[in-house]
Image (cartoon, one colour):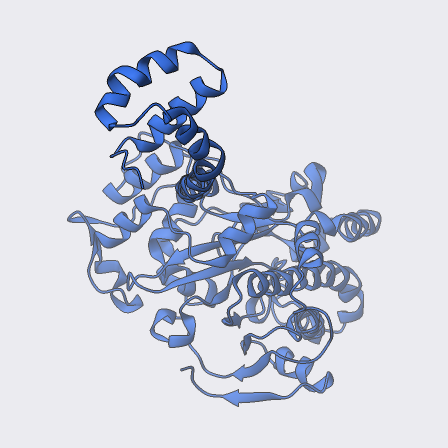
Length: 469
């Protein structure tokens, strides 16, 4: 077989081009320098024709395969960069995002340079470049404020276009699940394994094996941040709030700080703004607003809105709940090795105001209050949990791997959403995930254990556990 050296393909392509054009230049050149150097006789044209029409296509196919693989790897890099620049992903990018952890390299580097104990009890002692992690900066954003080195670097990433918190809609989830062809959602056979988890602390959640690559619900505000009322609460205050949301958020502190930076820069998605609409977001309730900094103040609204306004608000939410946007993101926990998808779920607040302490649904006028609170809470909570179930289902389909879904139902305890509402929300999620092969943990935080009740009423087998593996 003829040996053409390192440039054989280039030579063959050049020869093919001139020969096929019937160019006399080919005959002249090939019969002088090229033919002489390669020691080819005057049948060179026949040999080249044979290579061009028979062997060259095979070589070209192999070269194209190599070229395609390299281009594909470049496209993958471009896609990941595109993922990091958008909060609402296309169908293909969302599937890519759910398939495996997507943590921007710049953020990984920052996480690796945080020094100190990763555990909640010592989080205040952790440092970044010999500097405290957090300051008490406030909203709105003011460049003149004193900020930490960590905050400066995270702010810069946000200014450069990093959009790390993602959101999806029910319409997108339904479309992608419907197009799935692997049969995971083809029947209602129970494949999921359900657990009633008692006494599991959200603090340092990464210590559990089932946390790795899990999906974990973080009870937050609708802007994926944490607060005890309708004001902006910097991350530096969160360690003093011992509820589930702040604690679980702080187990991936750098990502909580990223959300803080994004919000201060006006670049953080709000889950419920399109549901409420501009009129209700700006609705004044004395010295407060109905909705402020991700906090939906339903109990204050009960005392100030008239009956017609209450009906109008209920109708607005029920008719527009399909505009709800579910927030979630891949995080790398404080131990620097445990990735998980945190899903940010919220509930309307029915905490006591104006001195009307106590649990509202145990009061004498519970029915009257419930006629306002429950339709709103149910519309939001059921839809939200249904979407979380669909997101978990889609991830199982596109990844082809099982994982743990850790559920805390937002709105129990201090926010006083009615237990019956939370049970309906749990039922909605169960209906979505029961036919996919994942582990589903209901972490009880509410009196009556609505997650367990939902499983029992549906006749679904579950295990009660006191600790996680």
